[in-house]
Amino acid sequence: MRLTTKGRFAVTAMIDLALRQHSGPVTLAAISGRQNISLSYLEQLFGKLRRHELVESMRGPGGGYTLAKLARHVTVADIIFAVDEPLDATNCGGKGNCTQGADGKMGKCMTHELWATLNRKMVDYLDSVSLQDLVDQQRMRDLKEATVQQEQKSAVVAKPRTRRAVRQPATQVIA
Image (cartoon, rainbow, N blue to C red; front, side, top):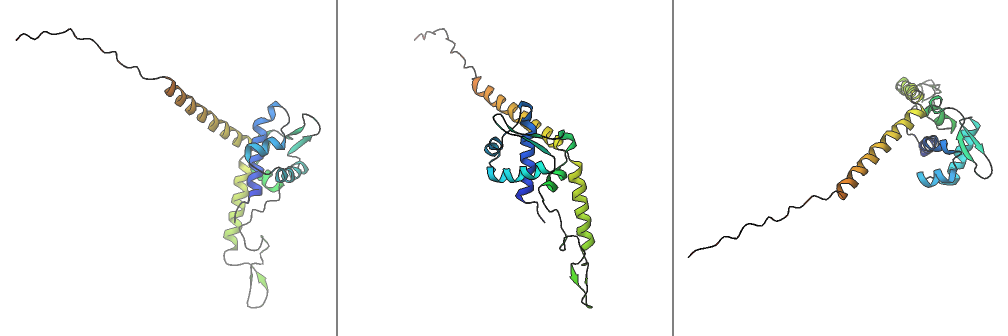
């Protein structure tokens, strides 16, 4: 079980959008450039996000995308499910027909409940993380990075002072 690039890219693009929409609609080309995600792939993802009413699109000059809801009302689970990302650790897709019994009937495998429980816990967790949570985390990382860069820049600019050579009075040697 893995989260594919579809889900990862959708979440990444939504964070990028949420961080930058305050200046107006954000173009997919801009997100594509910043996040190194194919523009055509983003177009597919945003079509699904729009159909699930997570984003709104504006056409024409100055157009692009904005969030359709406040970031605090969008969960990671909303994004993942909007782009049709399967989150299923079971072998049967949750149907309970994992294995064939001696009688020829399909039934649950011995570990079905384990994987089904993992599925529920994953969904619960992803449903507990809002887009706003991820935006806030990114802003904190950006702030820390900017602080470190500023400190490094200040350290380079502030050269250590060198001491001036102090002249010692000449001593005479008497022979």
